[in-house]
Image 1 (cartoon, rainbow, N blue to C red):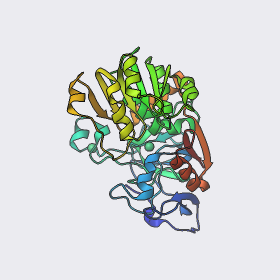
Image 2 (cartoon, helix red, strand yellow):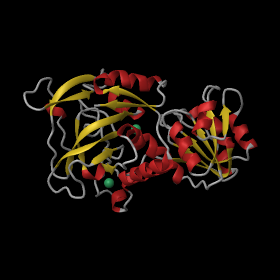
Image 3 (tube, rainbow, N blue to C red):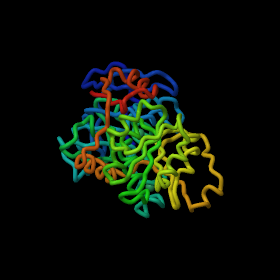
Image 4 (cartoon, rainbow, N blue to C red):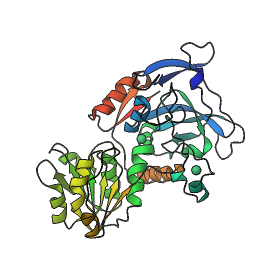
Amino acid sequence: MSTTSAAATRKVAAAPMTVAQVPKPGADFEIVEREIPEPSAGHVRIKVKVCGVCHSDVFTKEGTWPGVQYPRVPGHEVVGIIDKLGDSVSGWKNGQRVGVGWHGGQDNTCPSCRRGDFRNCQNLKIPGINYDGGYQQYMIAPVEALVAIPEGLTDAEAAPLLCAGITTYDALRHSGAMPGDLVAVLGIGGLGHLGIQFANKFGYKVAAVGRGSESAGLARKLGASVYIDNKLRNPAEALRKLGGAQVILATAPSSKAMSELFDGLGPNGKLMVIGANSDPLEVTPLQLIGGSRTIQGWAAGTPMDSEDTLRFAELTGVRPMIETYPLEKAGEAYARMMSGKAEFRVVLTM
Ligand SMILES: [Zn+2]
Ligand SMILES: [Zn+2]
């Protein structure tokens, strides 16, 4: 991937741009100037308008993803305008509004790609991890990562849909739940507040499972018909009383909460895991065998899946709730996201 990280400098003579970079694993963000990069063949340059701050940016910030080279510019919820086309780019034009999400480009040659399963490319490139992402005024992206943004969404509304949005939308639409089914959404945060809205618009009966009573009103406003406070009652039992969930969309990054909820699944029910953490789930074979229940993970999706997500959101009124920060306050924005107190997605504006 052609990037300019190696050329990062604090002061440049011509055409500088502002960049928020992580200088080394675990270090604070640095606001620096760099030269505006040039797109190579098969790439475009994007004048970035906004970039969402996602919990997965922690991989770059803390250096917990293998092989990240520093300094690195995080950001994989990018929306901007194509500003320059590299050679041999067709199908995209200057001035077009585009996004770049988690799926930052596939190699087209690995066994998964040869099957057309680009989502599971074994050499998947992720913006902000494998090359510089959207915490900067201009970004270079390969064409296979580009997402067209529909008119009805603002830049800041579209950005979180490119990671948090697509992940919940795509997990739900592949979960096997049918209209009218009971679907539980575990966690009412960055992912969950979108998951509840999508599940409601898909025609499911939505049970939101949260911690404490504060989220009950919001969960109902977002489209949940039931709110289960897992501080007050056993949430699995509460779901069983409702007939058992066909799907539990587990957005809260807590393996303990997921494990505790598993018995709330009905027959042939599925636990869809999208809240990432590294603790083991605790489910016995008997819990799986009784009722033929399954557990599946789901990771974002391709740029076309993002376009489906955006069109569906435009059509149905699903929108992220956001807090915005200027690029120069990337460190503050990141800390706000990490605090878990943001409501609910943090977005940087350029
Ligand atoms: Zn591949
Ligand atoms: Zn993300």
